Length: 408
Ligand code: NIG
Image 1 (spheres, rainbow, N blue to C red):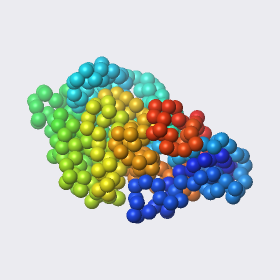
Image 2: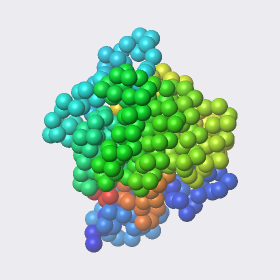
Image 3: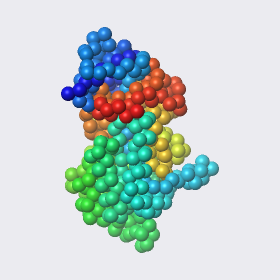
Image 4: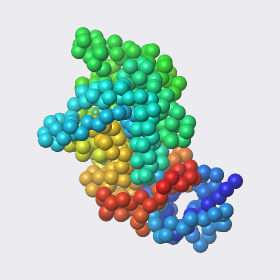
């Protein structure tokens, strides 16, 4: 057993679930942020937290020099398995074009052509970028293969990276777009044939390698009926459910996610009051995940995270790193945006990017630094976490530990 004492912590955001205040469920309750603190890591988990003066001894120690320490970011939504970029599409968007799901096909073509080694190298380098920005728990999806063989290849890659402790969660997103070889060939029947493939043979092949199934429920992708077919098949195969919903319009994804008890519905840009009420009613089951970087990159109306929190919904913040709508894994940027543009308090934004992400992944071991949690630390190059929004765009990650092992 080896132990490390971390000292010199100006602010320690334990966000200890045992101290949650039911009357103020979204920010940081009393006792969840300690000042002048220390912590002990033992065998990859948090063994002790408290006042520096009362710290026990340990095998070795690290002084972080008066910096703030947060749980590492929990990024519950990313699409890292791809080749190619879509900078030209982005540039056209900035010149006034709007985002349409069809761009997924461009990435699918590039991804299908990539060798296994190249794809793994690309994914590993994207993970390294995320970790360098303070992310310590990371979900990623298939979805740029869209044939049985290619989706299986992506799922195997994701699952091998989960096993290697590089990634944390793998999701099957065969229902990302109807691929060109089905779409348009004979119209809707072609789409239905693809949905049958995804929810049949493809799912059977991929399911052993992933924990989750996701569907892009949107005009131009899959309608609610097709989405429901995919999700019900995934549930029957033992997978947890996730939904891309209400990104481009009021797609029906929120109602579907709530009805089927999905762990998360992500994007949520276009919400009527009834959608917000449905998500508030699904608190504890279905998390509304806001993707601030995607909203900016697509010039979409920002997800109404403030309204969702005020109504009592669970909210997460994730990066949605992908080549089309959000080519960044910078969770710190997402948190700053949530504060500056979505009107969350700093504590609400930090919580959504840590505990919120953990809830969206149905995990209790990450997203906080209470005793027993995985020792995932994000040491800021700042004395207080408010600097995340006060100094937007600055490189504020000083150090990162994942499962007790220093990464940067
Ligand atoms: O979450 N919306 C669907 N999937 C991605 C975008 C994928 C793409 O355009 O390549 C998203 O935004």
